[in-house]
Length: 138
Image 1 (tube, helix red, strand yellow):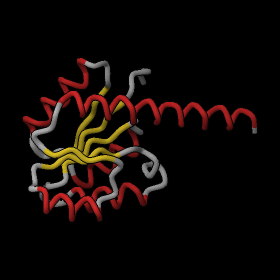
Image 2: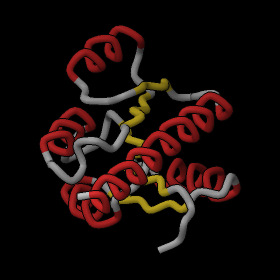
Image 3: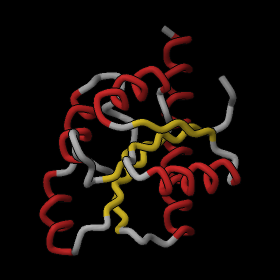
């Protein structure tokens, strides 16, 4: 596995997945993507530093996905950035129940998204290093 920060994209719109993948890989991130139940399994195996989560998806929406991810011991500490094209009233209600660390509405400002991804991925990597260091001292 590379030392690049890892971003996992949970998004049903393939054009959005391609755009996010290109943008993030150009910034030096490694990416993977999936949706639904498969995304939960792959995220657990991949152990990303950050998860980008679309709120409105068929089969398993972002609310259910984030709730299940945060209930999973191997995913619960991974920061989630929720993305949605819903109107403000819907977003305000959804965000209250959504288990996400940050939220951006679509269309989002690319610089704002990249800033959040950089911040959260650095925090994740710092936590991972601190955990590895504490395991060595045990």
